[in-house]
Length: 364
Image (cartoon, rainbow, N blue to C red; front, side, top):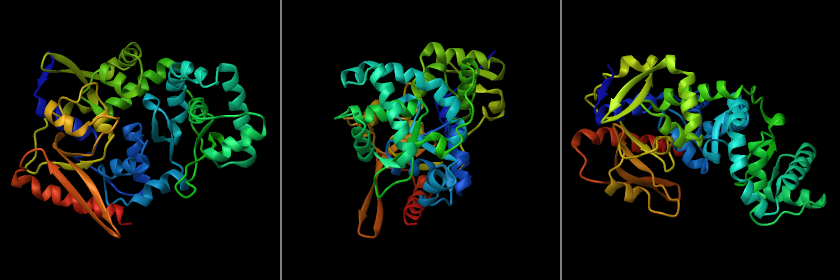
């Protein structure tokens, strides 16, 4: 008979799986270790991605995130889960893109055709892009467009980012070093060793196992929402690791954890709440089909304000307790917190520590 968990227990377990309760000791090596644990960190906004990593590490400074990406190259920035930009472990890129790339390439086919990049034209442009980067890379997007134009490949408007995304999902290119504030692009094979691809069934199982290690308790529906897999594929991944799973219940629904996590299912809140300041688009906010356990509908409206905006959130034991933002004035950084309701005095030491750590992290 499976165990039934209360909502507070599930939040605590998820916060623990996300490394909020037991952060890693900060270093460039810890950055790669954490990104590997999370499978990937949303990186549409690189500054927010760095803050997401900080919330799960101690003693880290912002420059160490870029060091892991550009110097040791243990993580790589490219399109992955949900077809969006992520930091992912370099050694996992081969099997992740082997699994996810074809899904998002198919999904974008119609839009690319509208932009003049049908399958044949897209393949021609990708081949030209390979030649350009092999000869001149790293290159910014504008430089790529210029070099392709010299070869008779004219790209305009949204065709430009769509070509780069296509090439990245094919495993051809990824982000290289920044040039000022502009990203550059490089050939994957010139930049990192992406590791091998896997048979599709094996890759589904590996993704399901790695997802649960960082997000459990969760369901195949949660995996599908976080990854961009179809529900059919997510369930297939679940079946691949069925012998590793333990089923529990939340309300009237089944969710699962790994048997390796079973000893944690009786986890109770500690005497000091776990307080974390997480950025907008944090993995924890994007990792599940529903965010109802994190935010009430009233509070969700203060976090998701439309236009694709997802504000940073104050978390207390995995529950959203407010929003926050940075205030930069000259060389001074301050953190402005707007709680949803009065915070108990027991939360104040944790919040003060988070604010101080965030400022330290950014002051490097």
